[in-house]
Length: 312
Image (tube, rainbow, N blue to C red):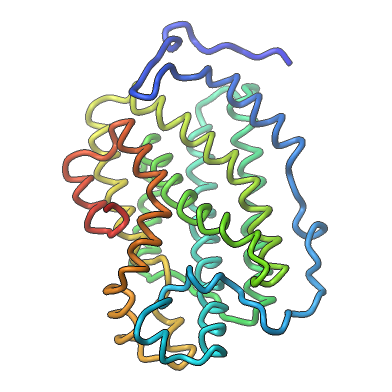
């Protein structure tokens, strides 16, 4: 397939990770992968199959209260019910995030050549995210738990973000939302203790998100090299603030009330949990290492990451 090479002035760009790849060549490879490994969840998954008795909706080790004093007092039935509600909470967060991401991608390509592979891949990713959002919504409905929207404050903060975010800030926030959930889902889809439908949902998401992460990483590297200093500094701050908000919104506290737990006690024990801290930092490590390498984790932004609990 013939590709359109970038402007000569942008060739030979390098950062701490090495030479940046040609934007069009990256997009062509991602389009080829999309053609081979894309899924229609409505056809791939058996939505009519009954919920399986005795199986989890989320691996217990990834449930927020796992290995806390409160967890040890809970019955197995209550633990599984909490996992079901947390799966719905994460899926709700995923839909919210993907709607933001789709708008950021549309803004990113608005001024770019509509015939470029880079733009074609962005449109392909938007189509993926549409299917993912519908898939997550069906999974919530199948599990019988309610949706868990983010707070009104975070909802409106995101309204501002998707309207004014600069390009590197958009891709940094994209990776924040994608990579931690991706790490958790990679543990979920091979886990036979988990509902078959949930495993299928996470498998599809992991396969397709791998391309999205590659696209965002390559573009963020390019932007951190070419953007003016003010934009790089703004990216460090906005990414750190996004990490702080994301860590708070990751599990909606209403899940504890809905399974009969004291919300304040549950939230306090999650915050004090060494296991939960390790899970979140391990899930974020691949991302934080990458952001550190390309110069995002500096100054006040790094301090915000530390305050979020996602950076050791």
